[in-house]
Length: 369
Ligand code: DAH
Image (cartoon, rainbow, N blue to C red; front, top):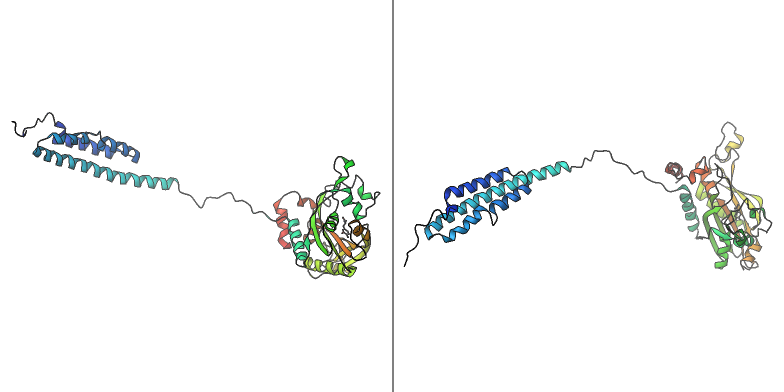
């Protein structure tokens, strides 16, 4: 029987020899110190503390030793591994802090640097005026109506009592759609909305209809081939010219302040009697007429500004829409929105409405709202 092996072979377990262990530790500490990034340190950790590292391999040898030697070697290796792990943790803290610091410097946002400023837009002055006019009528209980921009000849002309020989039907005034024989055109006024409305609902009818209209016009400072009108229609029992005058006076005051309107006799096929409505100049209130020293740009010193057309709805129009003219009567009016913005805001050139320069919109909105 053999006793415990107290004299173990130092060659076989040389990995556990104190000098060798210290050498492994020194190598590990040097590698830890030499790592300059956390990524490098990770490789060092695997090489010096991983399963296949010299200290791990030496640790495995311990089991084969006699008890006393096992205890010594266990202490030695344990302390060696402890020192290496501590050094790893300390270096990791150092490197991670340095890396964070570098990232904070590299990614710093300089809030004082100039930026590309996105200029603010502005509501289009035509939209602004349409909204304001709509508010005035909606607050009086009227409704907003719409109609198509491409119309059949019957809606745009016949139903509105414009005869087949009316000059407005000519090619030079109206934009007809191909093929012309189909009798479709771009509406030349918002008036056909009157017809659509009367065909779709019974009186009482109180509508305004703002929208685009189209004419074969030049494109210059005072003409656009596409411009805007606002149409009004009131049909009920006993509607008179007095109601028309009162309504337009209220409209004018809501838009321009303390001003009057006046009617001048005129002719429109869809109204009888008809009138052109003028607005008292809201800038000089007529003072410039007798005062050549102080001319008024807004009314050109005439005291009044042409605003639109109006009248009592021609019974022929009501009849075309199946409305009983013994029971009902009505009034209608129509004005140019672009023109209204022009004189209301002293806009020099209509082309600004379509050229899309926000400075035009801003300049008109400034004093207007
Ligand atoms: N449609 C006319 C135009 O384009 C404007 C107009 C005048 C409309 C009198 C009306 C009206 O409703 O009664 O010039």
